[in-house]
Amino acid sequence: MQLYSTNNPSLKVELKEAVMQSLAKDKGLYMPEVIPVLDKEFIDHIENYSFQEIAFVVSKNLIGNYIPDADLKEIVYGAINFPAPVVMLDEKIGTLELWHGPSLAFKDFGARFMAALMSYFIKNENQHTTILVATSGDTGGAVAAGFYKTPGIEVIILYPSGKVSDLQEKQLTTLGENISAVEINGTFDDCQALVKEAFLDDELNKKYHLSSANSINIARLIPQSFYYFEAYKQVKKYGKEVVFSVPSGNFGNITAGLLTKKMGLPIKRFIAATNVNKIVPDYLATGNYTPKPSVATISNAMDVGSPSNFTRILALYDQDYEAIKKDIEGFWLDDDHTRTAMQEAYKKYQYVCDPHGAIGYQSLTNLGEHELGIFLETAHPAKFLDTVEETLGQKVDIPEALSSLGEKEKQSTMMDTSFESFKAFLLGRK
Image 1 (cartoon, helix red, strand yellow):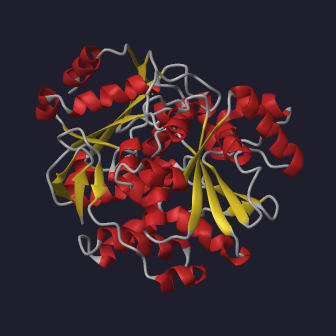
Image 2 (cartoon, helix red, strand yellow; image 1 turned 180 degrees about the horizontal axis):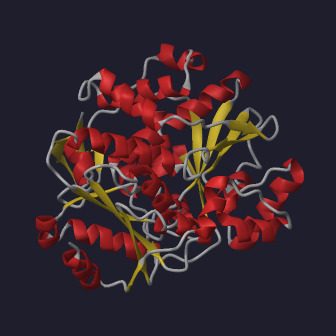
């Protein structure tokens, strides 16, 4: 499997280098040189495959013979060992629940697969890898759970102070062992900028073997493609054109979906559902891409003003704006309308949406006659407990995986947004 940099298609590496380096030396993101089209026979009979079997077929087609089948199957089956059910609200709208993994967020798929893949790559090497990851909410918890106690790998998670929910913060600051948390007095974009700058710093790279678990890492995108196939399998029997609405922050999740469409999955179109940080919806409406400082909202995982994976979308479509517009529609809501959408879904279907999923739900209320819409529920609503309970006037059941966090003590290092401070912190560690 050869991958190229989005900044320079002639800069190519093998899968191991792309995964372990995460970011290309020219600051580009890695993309597969060849996107395989899956056998039509597989798509036509996808209902006969289990989720794990689907995940293996998709990953095998992307990775090829780079990893032996037995090893790849062990990686896939070990990482993807929880379901991704589609819950139909009525005959037109369903939700793909992606919060049935250990951290109760969709990022469990990517984090667990990446942890297994990295472990495979370094198992016979005397090498210690340090993963730097920025989070606007759920990435931190998923990565912390996925890499917890993984031999040869330590994880440093940067998150914006006061801009993640209490339970999200507990998930990434209470594990200890090989997981450390850095609380940045700024935004997610500040955290992301620090991570990117660290990768390009010669002094840090001499001390550390750095990698990332953010969606800039191709190992996150590969497993995120699995559940689009799994969702299609579950709704294929309805015989309608499938539309996916994807709550979007850094745009890795929707990029994975677009990849599946290129691989032959018959998806009619995607909706990029965002909050007021509507950089990509504005681009789709005007053709102008203008990153801005992010604004804090109740759907905090989408508080991103400069989505990293937008460059991958451009690469997938050869910079063709009209082709992108054909496959992606933009949609956004402010906080007030997000709350209204949460209330409507509960009143009409007795379904509790988290703030991100609610925006996806609202985007599907005007589907065409022959369309079936699926919005992604990317995190358990209990992870946004105060917002959900206040909005719905209802108590939300808290899963044991979250309720047990209340007694644990937060451990984090507070820091400003300057790279000098972060670099000094890293160089000062043993």
